[in-house]
Image (cartoon, rainbow, N blue to C red):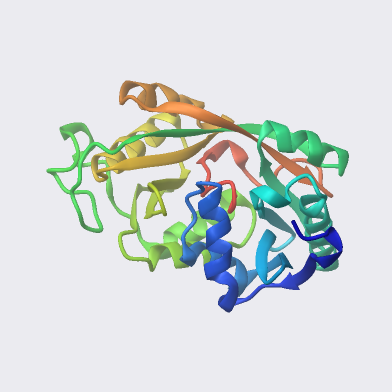
Length: 286
């Protein structure tokens, strides 16, 4: 193993995405090259290279008055050598330089470390996994895809409405992120009124989220409709506000296999209207 002195910091760009993807693949995360590109294009990705190899990463994604810290990855043979803390400090400093508070979604183990840096837990989140119920393709929910009770309630959601509603509930401008999702092959957005859900293709599973809804009933309708359109593995990250979705997931054989804590640094509480944000876009995106 190379000595720690040979580990050099680097600011990563598009040419580094293939190497970064190796790290997220090693961790068996669901990010794609397109996800990494979002951080390169709209945030900053910090890395550490040793012996010509990318051995660690961390990234920020600013959303206005706050930003997300994510993609904290260290390859197996370089762990416990201070690289994650080194990169976290770079992320915090970079957000502060932009005048942004820092938010992140941490595993219970990570929350202990981030708590020492001043982060405070605000709510929980559970990652669920299971299988889709359908396999109907297309950009809207069809009569074949959903039950009679959903046929009239669910319709294709206008892109402008999605962006406006997300900004209102999430509390930051991440229109660039949702536009990116919506422009990808296989992405589907469905909704009714001010409620919507987006599904997109991930590296290992279809990812459901974000899901924003004004009530548990609306959220359950959207989730059922989304699941009816997906075949194959599915993952979604349900925040505490979305606990009303848990019975639906359990009914369809999903299991909650990983917990997270949503944490903040540099502000009091979560932005805007967290009670309506029921499923996250993912721990990396908020």
